[in-house]
Length: 500
Image (tube, rainbow, N blue to C red; front, side, top):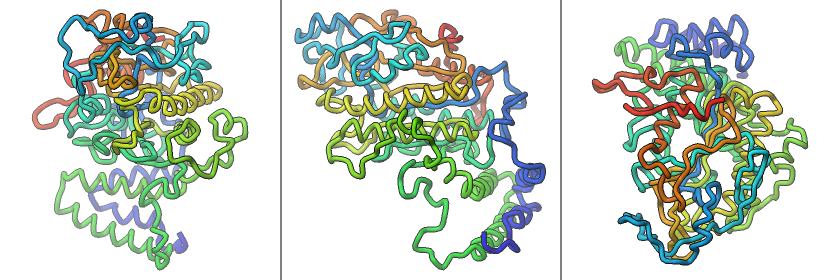
């Protein structure tokens, strides 16, 4: 700020008699003691500042999470779950042996994988051509092929993966982690979201909202590479009349008004959350731009992510180069934020803007839609894994690849596939995960789990992630409307077979 007579510290101290005094006082104490290095607070208890858990329930294997979400429903059959039976029966009339309720009547002839599969790594992992970049890290990945959903409706299925519930009004997984474990770096958000550059997926911000948890645990939306990556972090460029002095004076006035408001409404957490948000925004004005600045990254890192030669403009049609740049940008930004103490990051691929198709909902043409998206995703994800590993960060960073449901083994319109909530694939790697393995096979057609009595539920994925963070998923609860709510509802089992 230009006028140091009205400083950020003055603004914070003016809140000392208000509702947020205790919280802000603690922040002042940390300021006086000197800022800790990113991740320092994770040592020992594993609980960062602001975490609700007094201590972890058991020794953690991970302290950070990256969730890669393919919005629109990626086809397990064309990327990760090869089925020889579909090759043999390609073009034959599909027969599931039971009545099937399809979302758009996509029950045409059997459709073989649209790309060839090859084996990678010592594990011999089968991967299709557009995701072949993941072959470089094949032995780090653990695949779960028998995940089942509850619905073939995008909005509900997306919420189930993002929040653990099919209805809106529940906190996102990142919000739960933020609430339980707190921050590793008070200068950056605990939970960060990188949406698709074209727009938001089904449900929009409901996927990462804090719901009934304190508002500061909501995801902070960032668009790496855009002109204004973080909305409202700085005054609008048209506000040329705003100076450091006027901005600081406005903050002091706002603090006074907040304090008066809070004194009349004791117990109202909304104001405390706003105060925390304002304080975080002030800190982020310095920390966030630096974390998104790739100019100091060496050439070999930019090349690893496919960002060494970025064209000035892209074609109107979706293409692999465009997808690589946009997805890799988010992956590199994720690595930079992870090493600076961000706890939970969501990276989205695909939006909900309909036609022309710009997501994974490939009813019309799997090859057209999945090809570029898969190539870009695989390049960025493989680079992120390699980059984290070479920095010694993969061992305590957990990565989850997911989508809301899979696609049917039968064809739709000859080239597309309909929704399949009955079976699909997730993969995990990093902190505490045993790489190079597969768990829970699907049946011969990839239609349903081979063992229909023991599928993997979304709750099991969530329970496993919390377990690796040192949290018993049954004990991270919040009383809301007379019910002890938790991420896994009343379900969930840790997938011990995946643990290293």
